[in-house]
Image (cartoon, rainbow over all chains, first blue to last red; front, side, top):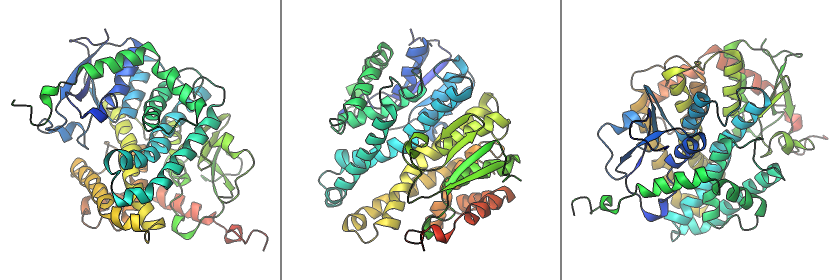
Length: 226
Length: 226
């Protein structure tokens, strides 16, 4: 538990990723929710290199995660978090300002923080030696730092972004882990401590361990028939 | 109606923006919902140049829109759309696969399409003459085109992305309007026709007209004391 072979909930992830992506594939966000809620789920691990036939009918952009919950099918980890929270009555209040806060911060993670971070991550991880990347890097770094400062200011001395721990924190901590990995939170101790609070939760640790356990080097490109 | 001085709902927008941003500020998405639902709202138009004191306590990134609905406060247009839809029982089914589809496509617009589009928009609108932008532009263009192809494939011959017209379409049409404006949908007639279907709706037209009517050149930088 929660990984359970005959569970109603199925989370699709990858059976192998390159080392830089280990622990950062977004099925981790869905797994984390299930661990927090004690919700059994089964894994479906597909090849990141050669997707199953017709995969885009399940995930229009050819990515993961996809969630199946009985007959219900969702893609986009943000939508999956909302669905799981509503169905299980956990980590997303049913109404009022408490729900408004969680929805606002959930969307902030997905639309105001992660896209700005992605520009820098794309430079650092895939294009560091490119001329354009060297020229653009200072601005991309500054743009992300301004987002971090805004988050610092908003979080202040609170433990979580929207009252109790919520799906907004699953999203925001998951996003900000990449800021930590890029070394961009060293001057933001408040935010860095927030990420630590999130990742120290046993539910996160279990979800991360289970994602990592699913990566099998025999599925690496060139190894599949070795 | 729906703009009504004593309405419970208040949408914050700007009282002036530079010409390139006219009709693209994201309070349009909230206005559009209100028009579709016949929901009265009042406007609060603030300066885009000099934000009100303490604005970041209302919008952590210093942007618009912000929604007030009686005592409830939200930021992030995606969260505002979910809130308005849930409160009014419109454009977001209450459960089942229909709700899952709307949530999946709503998040797709905000996390899988708009961020990819933003990279190209940032190049085209603000950095076209920069060396890094010229080097990066072909890849940014191709990345966005791949998203457009995925959307084309997913939409096929359907009218809207998730069954009936929904908040997912308010988001996706709003995002794809910028693709049209950048000339990147000329080879995607299916998607271009989808954007036309959305923007031809009387509710969109009214919302757009009302946003544009709120822009006052006397609030342009350097004109405020003219």
